[in-house]
Image (tube, rainbow over all chains, first blue to last red; front, side):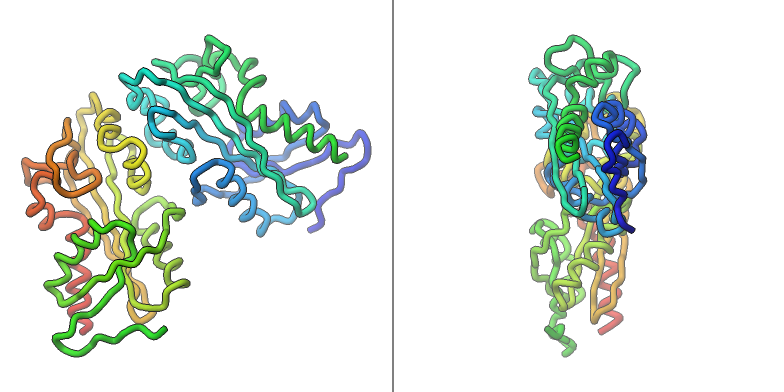
Length: 195
Length: 195
C-alpha cells in the first residue's frame, strides 16, 4: 500500500500513531494539530520488545511495525527513570505500573532522600520509508504521596522541575514541559519544515 | 554441526546449558550428575525476550538459540511471582533484582499480610532437533527481612513451604524442593528413559 502523500497546502498530514494508549494519542494530537498534523490511532503490539533505553525500544518497535505496515507512522516509547532505584522502572514502566502502580513506586522510595527522576519519551517517525528517532526529557522529583487526578500512569507522583504541582495536578504545565510534549513539538517542527 | 551422540553406556551425555548465570549451572549439574548428564555452560544472550510466563520465555529463547546453535542444549527461565504484587517481579525477576534487589521486594511488601509467593522454573530441552519444556514450581512466602548468605537472587527473602528457613539459609532443603531442582529432576528422568 502506497503511503498517502497529503502534501497539498492546507490539507493536514495524516499519520498513524501506533499505540494501544489513547491518552498518548490525545496528548500528541493536542501538540501536533498546531503543525497541521492529524493522528489516527493504530494498535500494533510491541510489548515484547525490551532494551536499555526508550530510544532503542522505539527504534526496534518501529522496525517491527514497518515490516507489517507500509504507510507513514509515528510511535513512541516512554518511561520514568528514578535515580535512587537505579533507573527503575525505566523501560519496564508500563508493566511495573500494571503490577505495582504508583503506590509501588512510593513504597520503594520510602526513606529515600534523593527523589530525583526523569521522564523520557522517544518518538520514532517513519516517513516515506525513512526513520528518525527524537527524544524528549523532563526532569523532576518523585513526591511522597500521589496527588491529582489528571493525566495517566505515574503522573500523580511526578513533580516536574519549576512546578509545585504533580503532572496529574497541572495538565496545562504538563503539556508545556512534559517529555512527550517536548518530543512531539520537535517532531511537529521537523514535519513543518518538510512540507 | 552434528550433535554429539554420547550414547555409549557409562559415557555421560553432554549438554550445553545456555545461561549467563554460573549459579544455575552449578544447581542443575548437582542434580543431573545423578542421571549421567554433564552440563557445559554456553553464554547466549536472550535478555530481550519477554512474555507472560517463564515457560513462554524459555520456549522463545530456545527457538532463538536453535537458530544460532545446532547442538543439543538446555536453557531455563525462572522467576519469583509474588501474589500481593500481582505476580511481580515474575518474568522481570532478573532485571528487577538488578535495579531494586531483595530490599525492593521487602519494601514493596511492607504492610502486606498475604506474603505468598511462587518460584517457577521452566527448562527447555532441545535434543536431536526436538524441543520439550518442563516447569518446576516451589510455593512459599516472602519473609519480613533478608536471611542467609547462600544461594543467589531472591533466595534470602523466600521461605519455601515446609521449612522455617529461607532458601539462602538452607541450601540442602533448597536443592530438594526448589523450582529449579524439580524441573531438572524431571529432565534427568526424561533423559534417562531416552538413553
